[in-house]
Image (cartoon, rainbow, N blue to C red; front, side, top):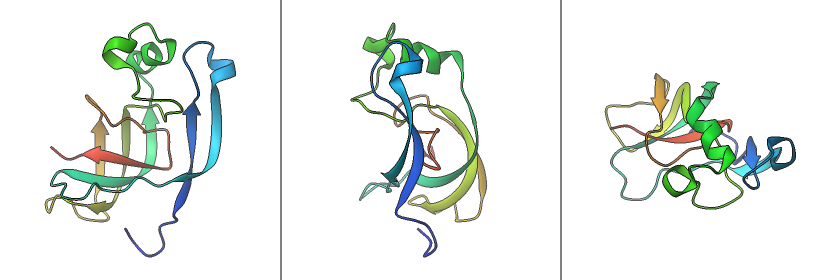
Amino acid sequence: MTSNTPETMRAVQISDYGDIKTSITVASNIPIPKVPLKSKNNAIVKTLAVSLAPGDIRVLSGKTKEYQGPPSFPYIPGGDLCGVIISSSDPTFRPGQTVAARFHEKPLGALGEYALIHTD
């Protein structure tokens, strides 16, 4: 990551399934995701815009948790974003590039100031 990238970020977090009014918070001091060691197809993106889709709402409801549920709580929701590459293990993606990403698998996390994306 760049030298001026903070170590923590703000992010929306979900604490449990159910009523969004009681399960959603905006948390500070969440560690910024890191590209996994030995990864060849990940990047860290500074989030510029996020879209919430019907699938995100299904996950929040818990109705599809067997298929789409988060691995644990709390978690950062959001599956579609655009942003700027901060760091990447994939040489075709360089810091400063603007990208759009959609999470068809894990990780989620678009509703954070930074997100880990797959580049493949």
